[in-house]
Image (cartoon, rainbow, N blue to C red; front, side, top):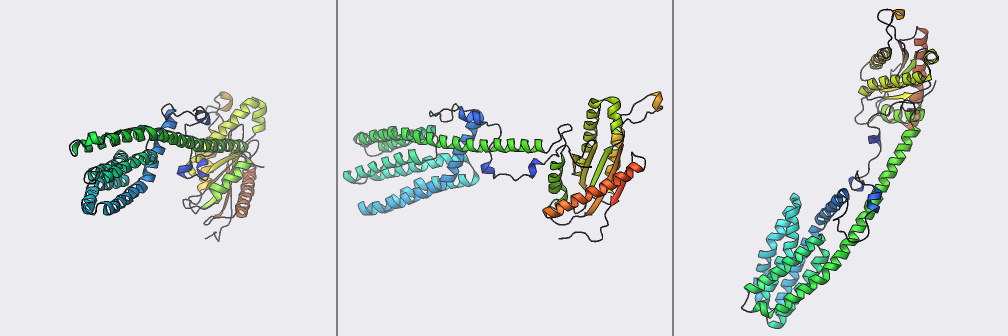
Length: 442
């Protein structure tokens, strides 16, 4: 007697090691969808919704990853420019420091709070507003400097715009809006400054426009490269997921009985070791038990009703056994032509025998003919004899060798009990229980 099958128990796939969350490919995304996206800068506008949403999430994640660095960089820049004030115009140091603190400081603090609270929109605004506020302060301070130094200050602010357009973790649309607000803020500060400042510094405004026009295409190129890198990484994850799924399907097929969809002998050995013999944190320290189910007079049934009816009968018996065993956390396998095995962990003394009796009754109720030749209540066309082998208590994690030994011992005991059931008149349950004076302990 030997093992060929069971329905694959729910949760088997969950027993396989899971990838870290950040390395998992999202469901609903196929490699073909990724390959269909051309190399032109689309900025996620024409991507499938699933991929577009993933990229938006990537942009948001990049914002949170880089916001701390950006705020620290802004703080260091403020310190450096204060030092420049001390070299160029010592009398302006205090005023410059206060103005910088009052403009960029609250924005930076709000941005750090938004990052902690995961206020994405607020954080995005703060990351963009901080350099604009800083530059507004520099433009205001330039009004108090000699013309040659004022021009240097203003020219330096164009570097802030150029760097921000390339460095800030924004989408192209956000970069474009940032540039517009940056230039608008500069115009407003100049307009509110000394009379004629805006006209005098019109060349500065023009320079800002040129810098924005020159750096936005560069930002677009960087964005395109980030998109391609994102798509390559996503394709790698999706390919790996599809490969794992294909391998899992191959494993399932190699461990399934093709007729009943039940585990075969190979699958039975693996699942028994993982779900029955092992002692995990959620496992009950009970006795391992194995129930062997043999359909009575199946050859006669097959010869009488035909092989197709016999196949249907096997599938029905398999389903009946599985429906009962699934409530115990156990597993079922097809063991041979008309034989099945069910393994479980006993929750109380006599548990396996009780389950076996439920299986016997379920099988006997599958095909009950009604007719005079069988009496008023009819006689079941299909019955089963069951042998139960109850092993020792499992209270620690077992080695692979111990699992194999336990499984073979349970098979031998259940086989002996089944033999006794056959000789007792069939359609009954017999039990062989291992003496367990010393339980396995940790």
